[in-house]
Length: 294
Image (cartoon, rainbow, N blue to C red; front, top):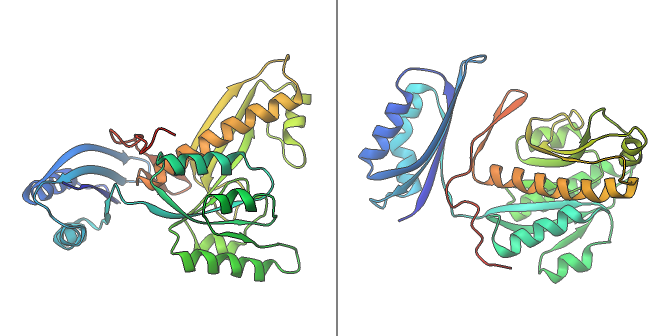
């Protein structure tokens, strides 16, 4: 029996849940978990339902059979196989902690992804990537060649059939055109402090101001730098006893964990973009299980 999930979003209306559960029951599907949210401020409804197709229905059969209900309620609806691996392109510059963490999680099957390429504007991680039998593309980016460089990046994405691009500490700003073309399909990670520090050496700035909380934010990429819809955040507490180098090391760990959790949520279809925000549902039972121990 195959584990599937259904994502729907639409204007809130009476009878949505009944229509979905009734359809799945009629299709010999057994619901294993479900989460929903009715946003009273926007009038929109969001739902993710995991189920087992006990009657052997295929994705195409479920999709076509559900179409009249989707039309009736004006739904954006998507059925998908929870066990299928999504193709992902990772992008990195010179900070490799997120890349290393994601490659490890990919290798043990903790993230249901297929890393189809790694793109960098430097050569630092070529050997690491090639040793994992993953294609490595070094695409230099300058002010003069940025349009051509982005065209090369998009060629890799399209050629590999990647469904998601992850900026694993990729230190280049993407153009508005690329952000719009890949809307909802690029995830970024960056530090976050209160108060906020921008520019060079943010951790040093935080240390000099005596910051007590170091955080990280993972979000979808938009044309507004570091201001896209937030998927995941976390913090770690520091004290006066830590050095600025300690801040960097501790921040590194938070960034890697937050990015991995954001990717996990996206890949499992748990994230819905809701204007400038997101709706993120809890993980399904068993979705954190790894294929291998290490």
